[in-house]
Each structure stands twice: as C-alpha cells, then as structure tokens.
Image 1 (cartoon, rainbow, N blue to C red):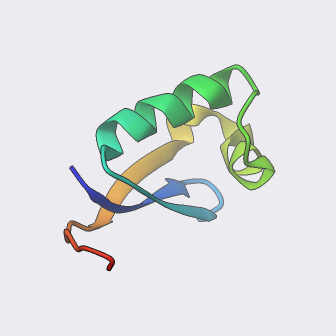
Image 2: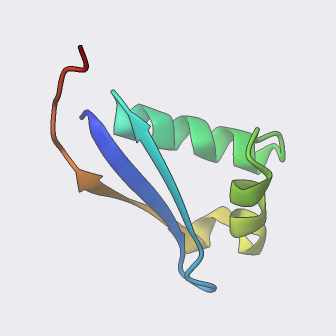
Length: 68
C-alpha cells in the first residue's frame, strides 16, 4: 500500500512519520534494522528503545498522487 505512515511508541507516545510505496514492507525493514540496532534514524532507534513490541505502525494516508 502506498502512503504516509507513523510508528508510535505505545509507552512514550513518541511518533516517527515516513512514507513508502510499500508500507508493510517498509515496516518489516524498520523492525529488522531496529532489532539489530542498525537503523539510519537515531530518532526511531530511540523511540524503539523500550522494545519493538511497544511500537505499532499505522497508515495515515492512502492517497496516490503524481508530482510533475
């Protein structure tokens, strides 16, 4: 699914916002990197410091658009 998503830490309510053409695949990629402590985003790594089990991804926009 194409769209904008947010990852929420359920303990702290901190939020990471991103976009992808494959939200489900991107979430899997985020989880893999976070569990290895190798994520490019220090902010998201900090959000997940309570454990990935406390993070959830939520689609916030499912719009397709073309930039010209």
